[in-house]
Length: 142
Image (cartoon, one colour):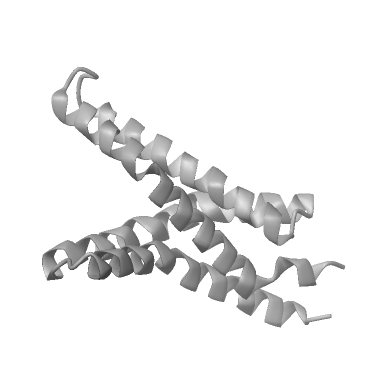
């Protein structure tokens, strides 16, 4: 059984590495599609969003899952789906908060979110699986 210190280090490392996954996946997609450095900037933007999201939403989810002893890979993959959906709902809500629902720019954003939903969900699941692979909460059972 791993020591408490090594478990804590792995958990912190998971929270450092896993939020990078959406930016890396997006960068890979942009580069594979022949994007230039300007479109590659979206990958950096994904990193700016994913780290605060991981701390504000992912950390409470991790603590909740640890308390419930939901520590398997399947549980973390499902949590990734839930976090991805939460991100889309929060982002759509914040985008619509400034203006009227009939605003064409807001409707365009929502249409793009619907198009990007599979990508967002995939990034969230990848991040959750990477976190699980590093932190290995299943090994911390007492």
